[in-house]
Length: 210
Image 1 (tube, one colour):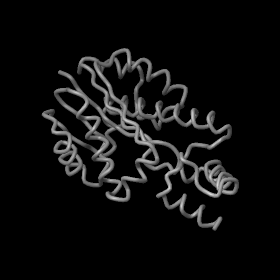
Image 2: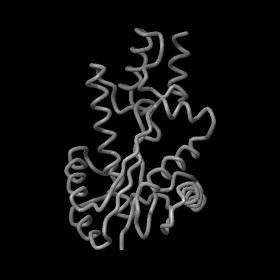
Image 3: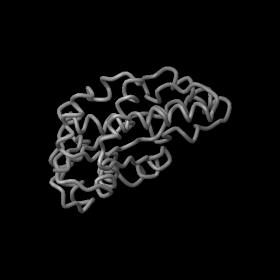
Image 4: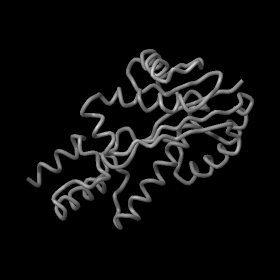
């Protein structure tokens, strides 16, 4: 039986893209994930995630990683909620893949509602369930979370290389990220393209320079 897991990385940052990863493996390969030491990406060091991502890809039947750039997030937030954006993003990933059963990390306080909305929007025929903390409870979702996080980490490094400066993790609690936004605003009188302009953190920093 083919099993699919899906999870996101980068829903909350004020800087950088969000990534939603879907991974399909044969159910028998779950033993390999366990042997690799796969677990929720947040519990792993970056170097360990990269090693695991390569191992995961070697046993994957299929995978798909969707990038949702900051500009798209800002545009979508003008016409829908962040919950709607999560449904839209997960639906696109689910629609790209085929398995007998799919497990999603729920991006809604109501996990059953999230599953129903993704099922409807993706028009999938798969058995589909969503659970809170699925990335901690199901190794297939943990593996997907690793793929999403590794891709996001790489994108942040690429951003730093392009801009020639440190931008931190991109999260609102990271002082390096806040300093980057403030410095950019001081020099350019606007937020950088890699920032989510609709985020309260970005708006607050921008307001301080007006």
